[in-house]
Image (cartoon, rainbow, N blue to C red; front, side, top):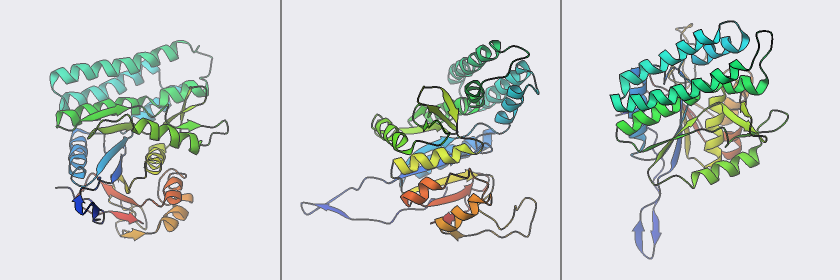
Length: 313
């Protein structure tokens, strides 16, 4: 059983009888390493199922590790698109073969082909001496998240969890100066949430957004953290959990410095200051929505899910 931080119990009474309080909402964000292998994705499913015992999970996922880096090579011309296409297709098809039954895997293969065929069209309209537009580049770089989401959603369904794949592109609005339009984004997310059926777990693309024109935009590297925080804030989540390959925040990178010590607890204000200087390794704006809404964050590891990680409260 994966441990989660349970909310405080509250008695809800009406007309003298005990009524059942609604479960709190918890946003779970899974990074590229957490959705980058068969074993880790199985762990993701266990975490989601365990979370359902005391909260309503909302899942935000990144591209599988290595995919966005490969897409960057294609957008800069450092590697030909056909080679990158073959790598991305193989990366997700191997995961699907390991995780999904043949019928579900065949349907997911259609998802993969639809996303990659769209990119074929984008590249076909760019000459050898032409540069990609910003909108085209963002469209290409968002492909990894658009391939992760249906894979995770279909696997959750296979594990008995009703899931709904959701593209966050139309839900997060970017202003002309590149910043997030928080008021519009909050309205769009809350309206979308009203369309979810009871017990359905949404699986949402991190990193992607859109401009008022409808063109695809991105939140920048590490943007999936920002996506999760925007959803947590708009939906009044009780907690956000960031699942990665390190079990919390350390005084230094524990992979390079074995003597580094893990923080058990930080305040949001401390973490915000640390993150603005790059000390957390998160998107620099990711903690802003959590600070404004007073939503605590826990950083945990899918490699060692039994560990409590670091609480930012």
